[in-house]
Image 1 (spheres, rainbow, N blue to C red):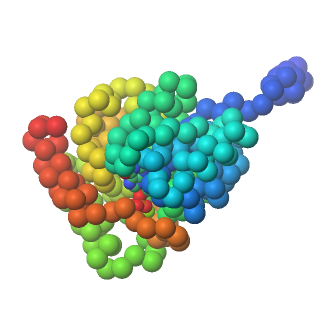
Image 2 (image 1 turned 60 degrees about the vertical axis):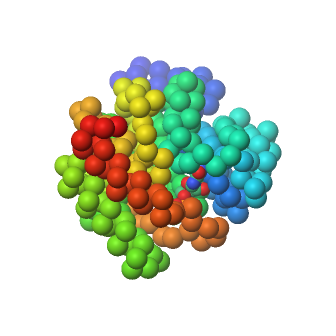
Length: 252
Ligand SMILES: Nc1nc2c(ncn2[C@@H]2O[C@H](COP(=O)(O)OP(=O)(O)O)[C@@H](O)[C@H]2O)c(=O)[nH]1
Ligand SMILES: [Mg+2]
């Protein structure tokens, strides 16, 4: 017992720093007002790196992150030439996070609708054995604040629709605050993923479920963004409605 204790102490003293085994992928388009505050909050956990995937934001988000990354090696930046969509941004980020050896790979919005304080809870659920953990607005304890009736109806309706058609045992399949264990992203063929908006989240949950992975949900409160503009569009909603059927019929 005494021996075990002293060995433990020695090991701790020898370790140069905590290993950063998690990468938080944050896609950005015009988030200069948010990203500078968000990044340090993520990095407060020494186990985390952050990887921003910026689509040539006209407001200079990319330059801001580039400047931050020069002083902090745990900040990564992927710059793409134009607004290419959320789904392909995540796929690019996942590939880089896998290549860098991350064990836990998070998805997270830049606009503080996803509160960084939940990162620990999502990670804990993944460490407890879940393959994919979704920060969920639609399990007891979760919810949205600030949204008007229309936006709430779209989100709720979209989740009911996807859940019914795909028989997904997930209450918040469009939720974009997630923790994937790397084994999920290694197994899913990311080259086959076709959806680019909210449907991307549904498609990833469906592919994980069909591959037999365990999905668990952790309640989150989702406030609307404080600053900046939503990139949600009619096209994104239509893509989700159509792609759910394409997934169900095996067309994608
Ligand atoms: N790289 C990249 N990020 C995007 C794109 N569209 C949205 N985002 C980011 O994805 C996150 C969610 O988008 P947001 O507009 O907040 O969607 P909403 O919360 O559903 O209204 C934010 O961090 C956005 O900056 C895109 O085309 N490319
Ligand atoms: Mg948002």
